[in-house]
Length: 155
Picture (tube, rainbow, N blue to C red):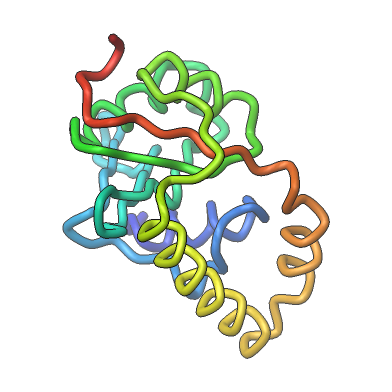
């Protein structure tokens, strides 16, 4: 199976993520494949000025519990990173990787994220992703921000 097809399928299942039509694999993507070279885990970073946002991190349900989130976070690099999530498992992985809860990623990053989210929200309206919009609005206060200030992972 092609990695992008797998990724779009994962985005379809995970309502907290962007719409499947916006799934992409590029130089900022981290992919872990199984022994048959089939994608089983993916993370994507986006430069937000004075830090990079991990704006999607997914692990195939049949491979969860094997430390793949930790491996993805390691492969994201050791610069300043931040991520928003409401998933308890990902929150735990982020904390183990040296991320701490924060109120804001900084003014410049916050403005950058807001502009990005408005674009995604507009796309969801345009592509009639109302179920996803309702889900994300319903849970907006449940998302937590985690930041790692460029230190080594796991410290």
